[in-house]
Length: 223
Image (cartoon, rainbow, N blue to C red; front, side, top):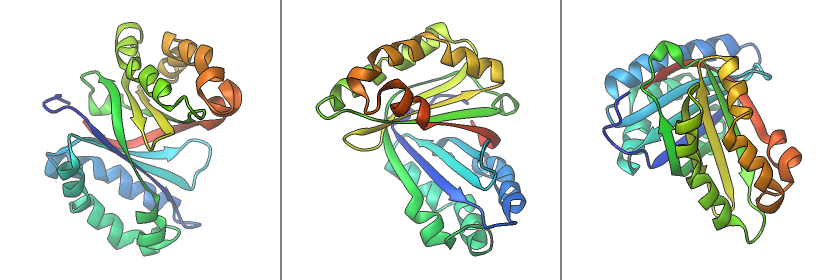
């Protein structure tokens, strides 16, 4: 991955496989990274994920420089393949199972290393809800996270802070190993977030952060 353009837009889609179709959906996403890399120059990063705890839940994660990149992605070959297969593979089909689950967000800050495709194996996604009146303070806190990760977490390959809406935020990370993930949660950003969570986040640390952590395996990617 060469950071020629700055990431400003993100999209995360949760997709639930129909019963018995988990393997087929995983296979589709496993083949998609190469297609994105070869055919979508405006897609800066793409990942297909499988939830580590729930075998029927998958995610598609994209990052773009602008809205035109997102538009081109949804008009691309991977979206077309998913559209074509969704009635067979996805609960709710294309409209209710894919389109209605599209979650677009703005990038507050991010950091990425020069990642090889084979290195990116694990991902973590955390959704955060700001306390009323603390929305901008949480945004400001997250904006400072990327530099701290870059300086102190050599095993964190990619880190994003996202703003989904006025009060909803997310953190997205990528690692090559469980050790890297564990180091992240024992690191300075996590410690700072824990320290500020009672002040900034609905539910505090346990109910507002830890309870909203989702761990996934990366099936394929395009960096």
